[in-house]
Length: 567
Image (cartoon, rainbow, N blue to C red; front, side):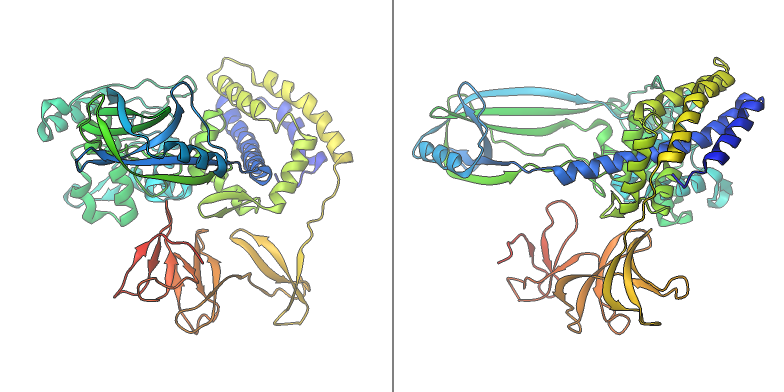
């Protein structure tokens, strides 16, 4: 990704061809080359996703929800419009929604069909490096690098009282879900003491085709070392990560969760509505662990808990109201660290030990920044990616990187000749490198000049992009090295001194808000302030983070919380 000197690159490769490398040394050299390619491909994935978002055109659609209850009863529930008796109908605009509502006026609602199903959900296998990174990101809010740092501490050993220094988990760089037989037996013994027999289900997991399977899955070194028993000896992050690893491993040796699923089709004239509900018949492994999914950062993944009242086929239900609602299709989400790791693994790119440094490096070099826990390419990232894709299309392709990973594995295993692999790569690469050295255009990133003068020399300040986002720098550089944060006003006045609230970024890339008069005013908030007064006490409001983004009053005597629309 850094500036390439064609002569230096050719000289290095010529030396590599001239020396006989052992498989182990080749793997180390190949690993370095592989990590560089994966960084480039990772940036390419992020850039291509950003361009998808930029050209995305939202499409309008509507839903109609019927609020129903048992006739002369109290069991309320909701059913979603599906279409007519013969086909599904997509509601494209408000006029179509109003036409359907008009046809439903005064029409009775009747239970047409009831379906009951039982669903068995098996536990997930114990963690590999990538799945640990993904789950720690979603459930604990950890960056990939932080996950690996804390896992290293747990692996190397911590003082846990009378036991002395003990390694709490097995090796944390692995792509295998295999478990040692002794670990399975120990889990069986532990579960037999804590739960009744119905919760026990010992199992072994098979490693995937791409797994090197050099180490077993990540698990506690002793299942009897419960998280609570060592909590006093661990810091907060160590305890949370150890608890996650312990619970996932123990849950993997437990019985499936069993759900009762209920679906009810309701006819209203020629139109069909459907209500669904579920209830837990047997909790199984879910008493210890629940799966997280992409888009659920900081929260547990949960099965739907909607409960339907007892209904019978042919029964009439009362309509309490019809709720039409406008929606728009959403662009694909930007990559979170967890989603990027998952995507790279699915594409067969990279290795367990490379994901954390790859994500750190592309941010450290300014190709990517993190906004609201999502990865966004900078202008530099776009420029570098476009140049590499244009002049090195083969090397920058996902398929090439994945295939090269396989070749490196076979060289390490001794089933493929390293000279042949390098020769096959080097000849076309040498020609491409020569063409790029002569034809690659020079690109200068244009800095945006502001009307703000430098506080030291008076020259104009420009907006530059850094690791933690944009900042202001003097145009007199290098004679004048003055810099200061680039502040983004959000149009809200500070509740403490009336100053301007600005958007800021922590050293870990997390967005927060503060008063522009700092340090004179120390107002800070992780939640976004809004210029909407509290509907109850007219106090200062913020918009909370997370799904649904409710508003909340900051007045402790009021503490109103809910949804509302800005006037």
